[in-house]
Image (tube, rainbow, N blue to C red; front, side):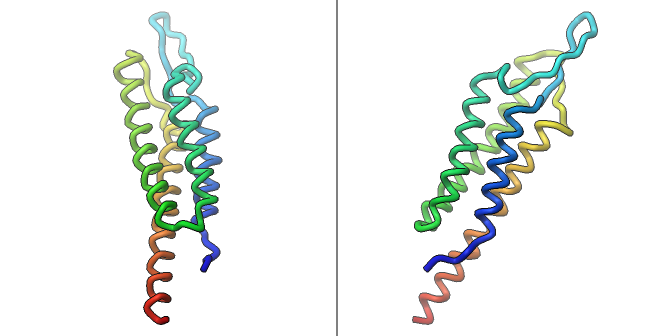
Length: 139
């Protein structure tokens, strides 16, 4: 039995937000002479690859609706990877680029929005699993 679910929309929005995050600056570096430059994901290729993999994982997760348990596990993995990516971005800016600061209204906020959307998708999947279990009990 397949239930039409809102979590597919949440996952799709999370993919879109992750793609936008990979294209927007997430930090600003101030040089010794006072010039400020934006730091993009292309400047840190490891983070770019990790965030692109998270976006692909979220996209593939949309099509796993036939196996709800696997979809829930992959969503949980995506949530952990998103949280790790947020910590890694903060670590790269604070340790790897002295004199830099995060742009909270830009890239970091997008990363947090993707994390929240993935959590909402997981909650929707958990709700569907409960519904399916209750239907199985009625049979």
